[in-house]
Amino acid sequence: MTDFGTNLVAMVTPMRPGGALSEPGLTRLVDHLLATGCDGLVVGGTTGESPTLTETESARLVRAVVAQTGSRARVIAGVGTYDTAASIRRAREAEAAGADALLLVCPYYSRPTQAGVIAHCVAVADATALPVMLYDVPARAGVAMAPATLAELAGHPRIRAVKDAKGDLFEAMTVMSRTSLAYYCGIDELNLPYLACGAAGLVSVVANVAADRTADLIRAVREGDLTKARAVNDDLIPLTERLMRSGPGTVAAKAALAELGVIPHATVRLPLVEATTS
Image (cartoon, rainbow, N blue to C red):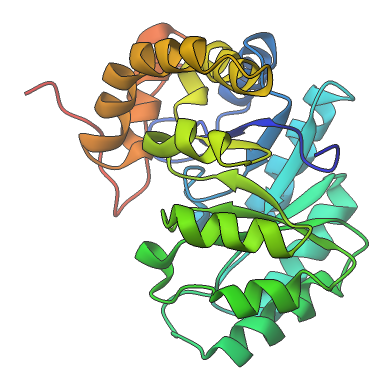
């Protein structure tokens, strides 16, 4: 867990009108996330609009977040793409920019075989000295990481965790029981059951605006107080529903952060469009 933290946020990427990166927005967002209880910042992941970020922008974001964060939290850089060579470049750039760890999504669109998934992940993990969190998200990638694939990848010395957005709790428990992989829930709607089943922590979109409450949830489960954990979860349900069920989480999280005054604009890049009030 020290490789990544426990209360991780899938951080949005603040942008100015027109789509350029917003340095003031980034500074304020990082300070907000650290003040509200995040101990891991995932930069340039799905919620950070990774498919629209150039390699230069991704490295710039990591560098800026590392400088702002210091030793207060772990910085995990999203480096996965559908192109292994590009993913390796991003991984090396993230390492040079000071990232503490990497988030590596299952390669999307190409729908590789499980052998291809393994070869891709090993190639990226071999490219740096940083610990790697795999990101298993078949709804976006078009292919899932099979349990046997995860078990094989767990043998790599730097592949140490999984962000699970598959939602198969029995499979997650099975892999946890058979490997040393630390599991992180990547579906905010299922944070409580994943934690109760042994997940090491969360990678949360909701934590952009409520990291203090996700921290409370983690703490309650760790202390074995499931009554309190259910109460915290119940309190979070309306916010989680609003952020995760009304459209893309990125759009809703940026709108909420702008409404709270944390970031100056709710700008997203196409093909995403900003939330409307209608």
